[in-house]
Length: 64
Image 1: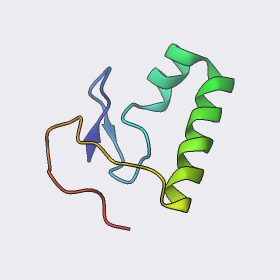
Image 2: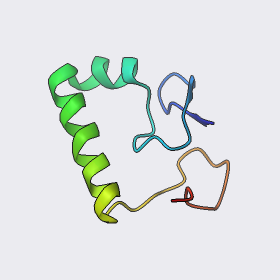
Image 3: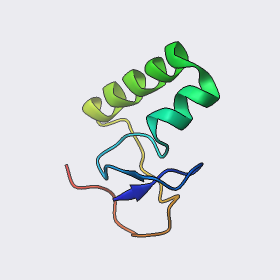
């Protein structure tokens, strides 16, 4: 499990974002949060998403 960069709650390892829905909506609002998630999921599906390790837990990118 990854941790939200804002509140440290657990988020799924396969998540395209490094923050939970509650924090994402709180920061950007629901409409912008959904747009960010949708665009990042589409980028992942195309193979355009570059993974970074913000949590410091692992040096490996998530397995496809």
